[in-house]
Image (cartoon, rainbow, N blue to C red; front, side, top):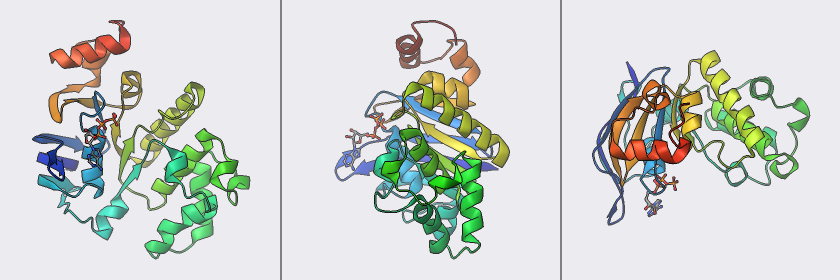
Length: 247
Ligand SMILES: Nc1ncnc2c1ncn2[C@@H]1O[C@H](COP(=O)(O)OP(=O)(O)OP(=O)(O)O)[C@@H](O)[C@H]1O
């Protein structure tokens, strides 16, 4: 069964049509990337899946069930999104504990203290950060909190929107390793938006190359590593990233 299936998805913001005929399937446990130039509609696709962009036609299916324009509680639990900017996405006046407990309260889940501690450990956050505020953490620690929050409801699908691009290079590598490990340990499915082709090569199985709201091609990461993308635009993107050097 597909974890996520999009068919002929046309997404608009008011009068502006942003995407055209977006169609792809992501298998359960797969890590799938959306790459392409700025403004090509990558984040908009994730937002439609997460219920944050609601003007669309076509169909979205998650774990075999149709996703509607207003996300059901069930889908919200199965699918979580992590944003680029951990500072912007964490409430500045809430402790880490309050941030991590909130989804449990909303979904009526008990045993909260133990769950918070377990997830903090899973993402490599020391317990002493539990009652601190976001401004008392580093950028990498804040992104670990954002990942921990996404994991609180034990989702199957994670939508990752440039999850490491706001971080220093050395911290990026740590967070990428964390995402790789979590996927393996928990059998997660990832849909990742990034500008960074080495990130795709490290973390993903397949990629869709987007341009001007359309998918130009869908490729295996082996094709990317071999510099063997089929579309002219995909090859240009590859050349711009690697200057033709194999990964
Ligand atoms: N809330 C919004 N209202 C109106 N237009 C929007 C909104 N959000 C994004 N857009 C427009 O939709 C288009 C696609 O934006 P989107 O963020 O999906 O692109 P992207 O490929 O993810 O780009 P980037 O890599 O720069 O994040 C852009 O032209 C953007 O200006």
